[in-house]
Length: 114
Image (cartoon, rainbow, N blue to C red; front, side):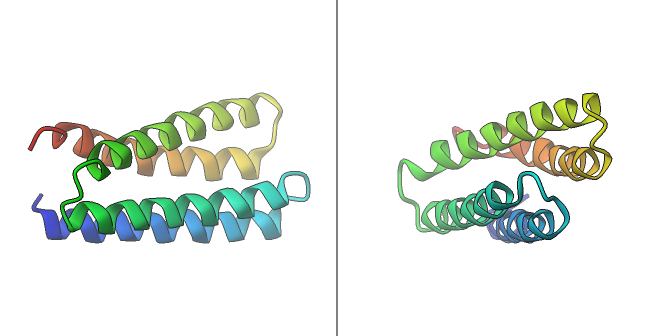
């Protein structure tokens, strides 16, 4: 995957994080404000780091890889927790975000030294 395609994938991922955060805000009564802030903030963070990485800012690639890795672990942890508490809608959304984030993290991790 070349840099242009990866940049577009990262911007799509950022948009997905923001969209799911807004969706979770409307669907979930318990964690609504945190879902909105997390989705919009995480999406903005990934988008900004992706643009910086595209402009070849030295520290942006490790920061981007670390951020996506932390998001992946966070989504996995929250998905398992939601399944245990029988919060089906939240668990499905978080499992989907985990499935979306993990391959992206693997691609970014493999490109760490390139």
